[in-house]
Amino acid sequence: MLRAMARTRLLLAFGGASSEHEVSLRSATSVREAIDTTRFETVLLGIRRDGTFVTGASDSELADIISDGTLVPDVRALGGDLVFPALHGPNGEDGTFQGFLEILGLPYVGSGVLASALCMDKVAQKQLVKTAAPEVPLVPWVDMHRDRIDDPQIHARIADSLGFPCFVKPVNMGSSVGVVKVSRREALPEALRAAARFDTRIVVERAVDAREIEIAVLGNGDENTIASPPGEIILPPGVWYDYDTKYVNDVATLRIPAELPERTATEIATLAKTAFSVTGCKGLARIDFLLDKTTGTPYLNELNTMPGFTSISMYPKLMAAAGVPYPALITQLCELGLAHHRERRSLANDR
Image (cartoon, rainbow, N blue to C red; front, side, top):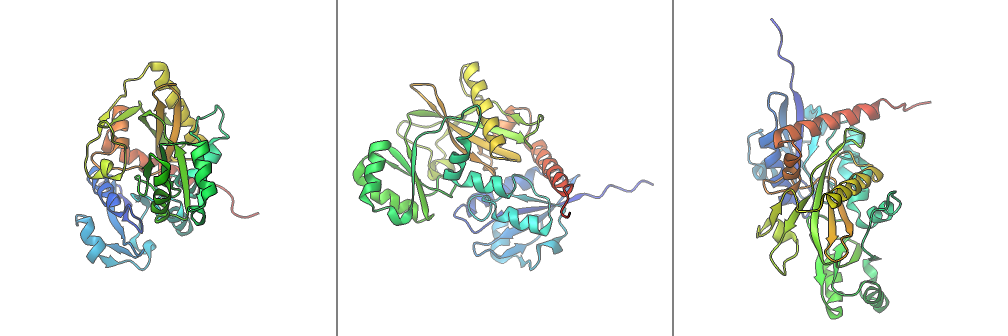
């Protein structure tokens, strides 16, 4: 009699010490529902806001595990074969958690330490992408440490080089947390102080009258890496894509595929794969562009190495349009994570 093949123990990490804690719970809930239970045994790994690890029954409400779960003194004791870090923002998507998993020797889904850190850091991301060939267009920006947010010289530089409106953002944050649109110079200091609540560094970007276009990329950067058709986020007049628009008010409409000339769609997909490659991303990324309504220039906005996986999130919808439905997507991401781990383990660690 043949023995059944043992299932891979998949640690699904969620929560985190981040302002995107609640978004992570939503993503992880959707991921859990899509896991192929014939291949994977789900083990839940909650992370409280103070960084404490907890676990509980695989069918538990994730919020209940965060509040009342069993403490996990050693993640390795959970016996995981692979980790799916459904974590967003600092302390989860920025390379810190990935570094922790590297030390433990655990395979995981998504980009490694460097790519995760680079793509979370909006300024480092821009500086690296500037070196890409072919060139990836970027909007002009000014960055600063928060100890200069009241400096009149910085205010003058922003006004002269960027103008208004502009967008003020914490350098290391996602889901538009701390982002403020500034339409006049008098409102700039308050916006800088608001962003400084979330990070010690702030970036200010020129506003572009643009369409919001997004591409999903799946792969490890080799010839098998695919880019989805571009999708577009349609917003009511006068509304921009902030945290409430994304997760609270749900006023955005997703158009997949976006109505674009074939040449433009191909160009954006090429730019997305170029940005994915030059930053060293693995597994997945949602890559966002601002398509200038006047010039037609597709400006790279940002790369998200662990984009939202909620029921209304763009990444899974884009991949579905590319022919990869949600359950198959989760399986492929797990396989890519294991493959990347095997590749790293094949390297010598001695002389």
